[in-house]
Image (cartoon, rainbow, N blue to C red; front, side, top):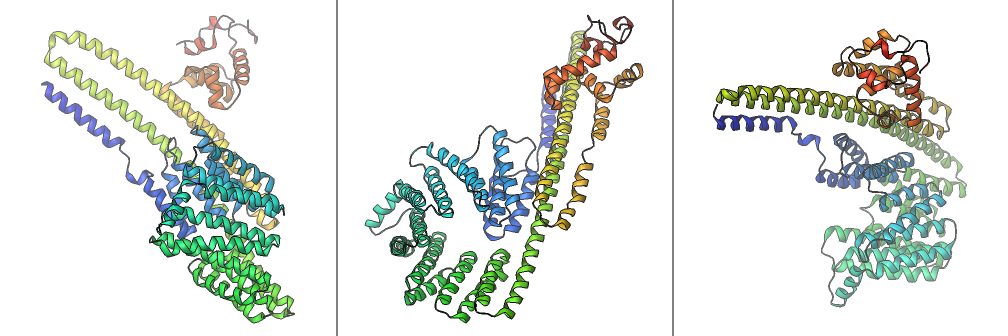
Length: 608
């Protein structure tokens, strides 16, 4: 056969291999998917959760990319915003484990997120620990690096918030001022100030960050009761934001600046109410209302401020009308948790004005919404557990598929080699004997390689069985933990069927049966002969014999079974006793011998 024909067939085989190994675009996560997820997070958290879970199913079981980490981190942030702290912590913890598996260590922003969960649960000592760890990492980055500036600012601000919560206002002020100093000394804010002198604008995002820090300090002074100082800080933020709004030509940046301005005016309304400047407060409240109408969360918060403004002037019906405006937005946007807060304020107003009959209806609505939120959170918890099970199944299927691809590749390679040898034999009969010898040798190598592949598949299957059962046990533990947090006994009983269903999946006997089937493909009749000759061997003994037959040493067996080396050595010792081997016969050589000679066995039950 002409060499060109051999080359043609070789290229055809390679093309076929490429087709077999090619992955569909539907099974690969790309950067554009992550961008779409971030965009969806701001518009619809529920849709973002569903999309993120679909992306997780596409991530390969053994992937060195950060996609799986980023998706879990985003899911944690969504659940944190929804005040579902258990689910948020679960995803943040999973993200952290992925980072550790990749050998990348903890990400500082992930530490901040975990700290935020503890902060929302009022576990301030744990929150402070994570904020400080994140701050240390940000401090170690290069100076004037964007991530370093924003990270230090957020870490310091969060530490300040903790001090505000525990009423340590002096220390909180120090943290807020340090965060402000970090923002003002950044190269980008210095560039903003320089451009401002020329009546132009650059880096408006960094300018908004400085304005926000002034607002934080203003809010601290408000809580502290130092209203004049609160006004001074508020005005500093106001001047920066007004300039950004006046000069910015970027719509997203302009919209964000207006939102910050609205929040700042809402804060100023509160301050002027405390100072008794009601006319000024009214003007600022109306301006804030206009600026925040496109931001549901901030608008609802401002309606509470506006209600307090009218209450301070004993305008009950105007105060109630403000709360009703906020409640209407909550109904439109589905903000049930914020609605409960508004209803509680309305209830307190009605009770304070001795309108108990109206207050009764509000109380019933609060109870109804509270039950609804609890049911939604319970449903979300179930969805999360089912999602974990789906991911585990998906990874198992991908692993099996990868094993099949390796086998196809081996067979394709063998076929290609055989075709080449036949072509050369037809072309040159004088070299027939040499070529035949090479063919026999190569076939033996292929058989050995195939056996080695099967041994590797068996090792991966054993590791997967241990990993699967460990994961299911971990899920059961997590489920029991979340169940313990549920106060209602009836609700706790709802978790029992799910725990039972997961426990049923921890089926070691079924796993062992599957392992035996695969092992028999590599070593036919080995297990049958062994059990026929030694009927007192248990399944654990047979497993150990299988691993030794696969040329695995004690350390490898310990790693794949999750046991200690010492435990495996003890198992080996007991196995020798059951096999009644002579002291000069190694366990491995006995299991690898074609016939287990009776000369290798001693009489009695002991070992020489």
